[in-house]
Image (cartoon, rainbow, N blue to C red; front, side, top):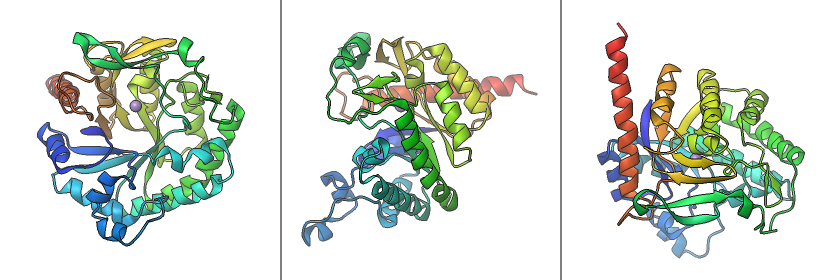
Length: 344
Ligand SMILES: [Mn+2]
């Protein structure tokens, strides 16, 4: 089991150095928009950009991915995963809209490029309107800024921007997607990792949220039953329906070898109202989570996820991530020492 820095949305040399300095073995990059100025600069695309307007990136190229990987490895880190493509590259597939087939073809091309570049894990989710919170700057411990969700508000503030979709439609769209892409993932040696819908409520903004509990993941893992299809187990999201249910699901899927990596974060409360929290407080017990993963022989990676915003922190959250990563690494070290002491 390795501890990795999570949620990098772009790569900079200082951020990579920081990840290594706080003891991470690798990094995960979250939904990189390769058309953003930061990525254009990082991937050194100014020359092609200067040649005239470029078409928006719909498929990641193996060269771009290889350059990302090389930049990470230059800092003594591994590029463990890319956590999904930008939502606007998969939204039509999720909703079953015209253009879905093109998006699926693009996704397959991206998988092939991932394989060529030797990046082993591609996260994804099935949430066409993304993670919802009804408060973005509530106050947590010591006044840290945290996000929160109240379903009583969430259900009243639908944007009406998406076509309504029920559970059966969302399952059918997902089944068509995974049936099309999984053989490519298997052929090129890339593992697809499904993140739960956050918040895990039955419906939001008129669209069913199907991946919201253990039963749904059981169905998904049975339907796409392959070593190349597994779970990004987000302790925070699973615990939003209850911390005990989260631990039950963790035990089941860890022991079945279906967890590729873990988002380790905590919350206070549970649906219909919850708030994000520091990793060392709230409903998620990181000691119990890591002990379960060790006992299950989990050999993937664990990363911090959303973190509270502390005093003088950056947008990415260097200070808070140092706290979260240090806590995870410290617990893991203590559990391993305990195991060595008690196992002859
Ligand atoms: Mn997560």
